[in-house]
Image (cartoon, rainbow, N blue to C red; front, top):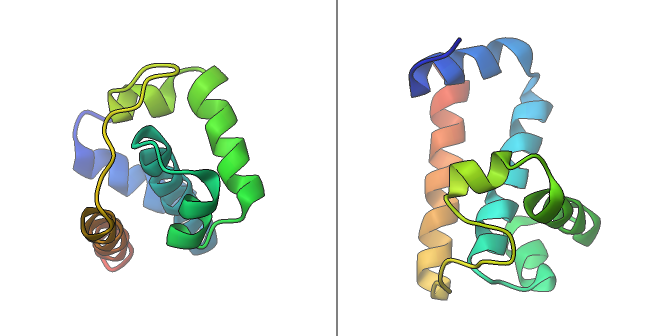
Length: 105
């Protein structure tokens, strides 16, 4: 069992292809923005994800097993807070840099 962030990252790099890692990263960013209360169209525009992907992530955020909610520390039908466009850009840049760090390890 993975006990640290580094162990989780190593496991994901071992079991996922580059395209899978990118898809997981995109879905997680979608989930973060959903939890912040952004609209589906705003999230699609911000992340490049299709509205179908946004809808699918929203379904699992609300009715899934709780994985997204556990990581995001949110609850069903509960939104954290709305961020400004500048904060959303910073969040996306951090997500991109985290993914790049893991891919280049």
